[in-house]
Amino acid sequence: MTIQLKDDAGIRGMRVACRLAAEVLDYLEPFIKPGITTNEIDQLAHDYMVDVQQCIPAPLNYAPNGYKPYPKSICTSINHQVCHGIPNDKPLKKGDILNVDITTIKDGWHGDTSRMFSVGETSIAARRLCQLAFEAMWHGILQVKPGARLGDIGHAIQRFAESNGCSVVREFCGHGIGQGFHEEPQVLHYGKPGTLEELVPGMIFTIEPMINAGRRDIKELGDGWTIVTRDHSLSAQWEHTVLVTPTGFDVLTLSAGSPALPSFVTTTAC
Ligand code: MF3
Ligand code: CO
Ligand code: CO
View 1 (cartoon, rainbow, N blue to C red):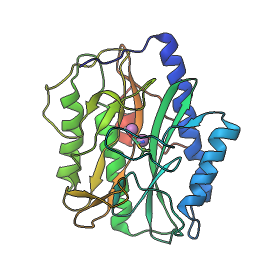
View 2 (tube, helix red, strand yellow; view 1 turned 180 degrees about the vertical axis):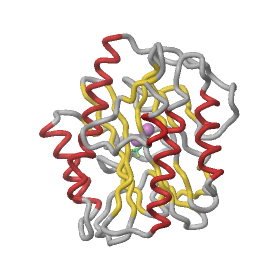
View 3 (spheres, rainbow, N blue to C red; view 1 turned 30 degrees about the vertical axis):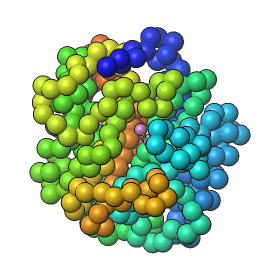
View 4 (cartoon, rainbow, N blue to C red; view 1 turned 180 degrees about the horizontal axis):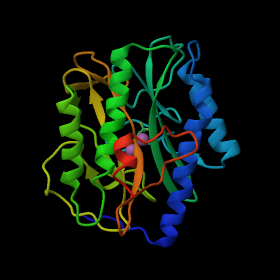
């Protein structure tokens, strides 16, 4: 396994790409209302990235091994869709929960982040799941420091999610990121403490747990991309790109519009 460590210039490049990705989500938030279609959100995001930020939407025509080229600039995954939902012409409706996943390329560096959005008023169960997935991601991030191992991250996420009656999707994971969209290592969202790769300063990877209200099993739709829960239970995901620093972590995909950190983060980190 070769994990590309980033030097100071690489970290500077990554900071910019990551901030831009987060700022696309800030820009989109006020548009996410009942009646808008995910194609309209995709167009808004595309034009903002290309015309305002002068960056490249990484998903557009992205074609990893075994996949056909992804046809849109962002991923929009609604309700029981787990990830990689393709924008379309169906209007959002009150009560939907939606993940918007943005990946920018700026000066060759990739920034990758996603958030959940509520469309109008949503059910208590949907809101709880979104909050749980958010906190699960942060429990993973809090593990990040030199000497810790990737298994510590996965374990923290899995323990939190499962102790709250939810399940963790196993088939998709976080990933190293830099000049490549998906680099080594794989960052599993389940696992055993003290196992897998040791973290060292200069590593940059995403943490992006997909948390299901029901069973963890998933299936792929006929479009070759969209992943849904097999039992059609709701699914939620959040994603940050994280740098391992000499003393801990630096979340590169924070922006003015990022939601407040959970209270357990501000009291234990930094
Ligand atoms: N942004 C996704 C991730 O977090 C990957 C999307 S691949 C795409 O890794 F082609 F669907 F955009
Ligand atoms: Co990612
Ligand atoms: Co992403």
